[in-house]
Length: 120
Image (cartoon, rainbow, N blue to C red; front, side, top):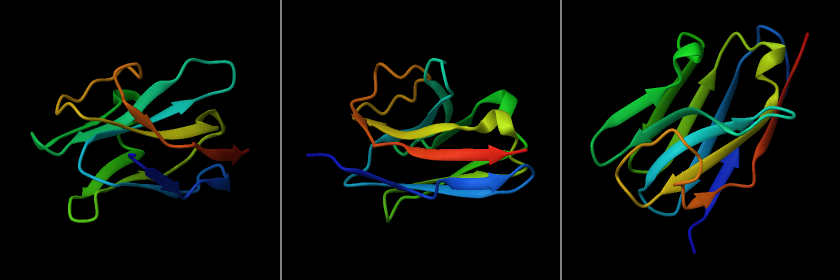
């Protein structure tokens, strides 16, 4: 049973920062998605350990940074200059394939989600 353990969500004022962490029980292609109220789940950032590729959604570059610790099988999402429109549930996802994809459907495993709320 694959486990994804997320941490780091919470309430922050606009302009603040949060760092999300997700630890997997093994090395998989991993990504962060978010789901805004009333919206579809969308990719935020991801990493493929096997081909050493990282990805951050273009609209979030400059504010969001992804990093990874291959020894700990942990994915980090550093979120700076947060805005109220970043308020969402953030999900960690993993897939067995080494290919990093932006759609949620191909991901095999999901964390429980962590709420990020940005107040204005």
